[in-house]
Picture (spheres, rainbow, N blue to C red):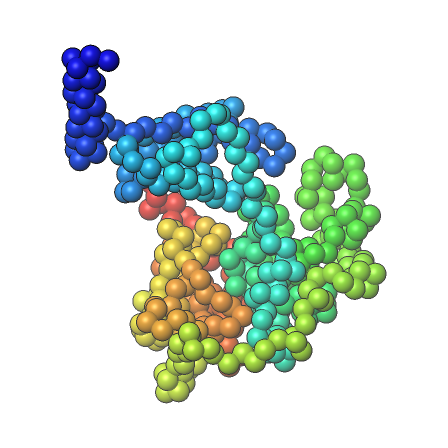
Length: 419
């Protein structure tokens, strides 16, 4: 090799080395990572509209999977062997993450399988929610809720629980409240239909029956044999309501429910084992609030003076300032409640919260927290009061006529304000 060529090689080497150093220092020569793939579920079906993120350091690129589950995502980064993170998320699925170095990035198309989130069973929910509750407390609370069947304001659409205090407490405690619910099936007292659709001629006994269904009792095993299948196919659940309000049909339903439950002893909350639960004393991570005894006495006296139809202002003066407030029109802290109620005022008797945290009405626990909820209508009238405190009264209109008058006037006012 001639000295001239050796000189050129040396110059080239120096030039490349210098350029590499400059690129490293100034990041002028960037690295690039590109990923192409497809997202599928456990059955191998492509999943569209999955949110996809590729990130390095504090920079992120985002895209979504197409209708056939495919995606392309890429980003420029430093030429070094940087750490990257791929993240995929979609409602109903577990979040997928993959960490890798730039030199080990996928070069061929990849297939990512998203796992669907499995809804916990009602048995699992009961086991978690009832932990630490004594059998004595469970029975007393179930009996108290059974007496408030007209106070139910929501039944769930696709889940076990609705966010309504009476409904959810009785579904969770249905093992010890089962007899009480069955006894109430024959209660023909009219109450507003708290289901979303279709509205029907609803009675307190229907509330008890629907709770048993939500707790695990089988409609096809109890009701289907009693009603006309052709009419049910034609008009749906209306056939049940047309049939049950005639003659002694509620007693027939009660007998059918009792027989079905006797044949299915493992149904509807009977798996709850209160004897095996730990003591319900608060842990070190909890702060227990208890109402002042003098304030409790005043609250008890004030509640005893309330009657449905009283002016909201008068009721609030009697009760004093609430500990929390929910605006039902904005669904703040209350889920799927009636469309004729405007606000709900909370009066706390005992709550369990983490130290430093404020009581959150949206995350209240009707099995452990004790409180009164006072509901006001759109016409600025007191409508009803829920209570899970045995010493404090629950209140709701005593007659069909008063119920109807209350919610029709309230709903009219709310609709007027909306327009």
